[in-house]
Length: 383
Ligand code: F6P
Image (cartoon, protein in one colour):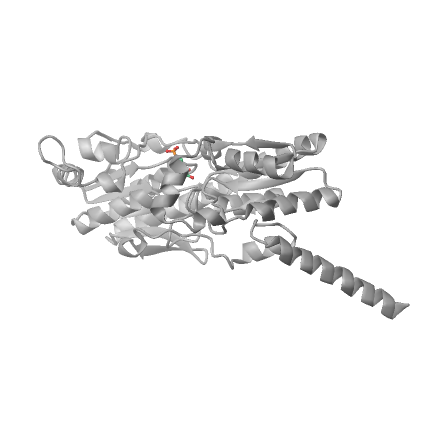
């Protein structure tokens, strides 16, 4: 008899249930009655407290399109894993005890960066672990895509699409805040897909003057509105120059509810245009997975089942060159996959005139003047 534990941890996203379904269905197909699957409630909390239930094949039926997670989730920060309770026992020790008591063969863990770090810690402690890359942020190292990302991109794009009409009617500037603290994948791709005019991501610190200049330029060229896609984690050039400590203090002292509101206030004062902020927030994580994520999660989930069959523990199931592969957790844990500033997506955006708020205004003016001069010379030649 094989005994497998499963849990979903950290912020939820679309595709958690379809992943669980992929793993479970493939295991039931392979082992029939010779397998028991246990679901831990609310992520690592369930493993720590032994809050678990035996699942049945019926639990995994009809959940392909369902949002959230049937197991529940919670945030259990990695940094607190070694904290001891009143009896001097830490969370890692408790998790190992539950695993051993239940005589599990493997633990399947669905989660993002923090979750994966803890999964790797459990692997180091000798547990058989397989993880699956979940997050709308797409910032897990080792996989080209994480599940949830594509669906969230659809949602964020839809927000930008819909904002266009009201922005045009009122000739306003709209800042649409998109999730992603450490990496700008979601903002970049939703911004591109939604036709944003300015995209601000953590990887490219913005200069307020440059953003303002772009707004003014659009006005000058007859565009009454501007859409700015702002990542939750967007930072200014001044903030980028700060030490970690200074940055933390400056953000703690910030009175605006988020970076977009701060930007809206500053740009309003600087450029005098009418600005509104839209924050779709957790809406981006809501609902069921789109077709792409349903397929991706079925592939990743069945990939995890194959790893269990072959006892290839200690890996994260990933996708590379459109192939499902196993990447050692030791390589993945603790690494953030940010957007390379020379990424093809950034180049494509720049090529069509999207600003990242980093272009020096003087440079742009010089470029425009040169263009005008070239045009004149061409005309003179023709004449
Ligand atoms: O899942 C990742 C993420 O969506 C980030 O982009 C965002 O900053 C964070 O979760 C929000 O988390 P919470 O649900 O704890 O507010």
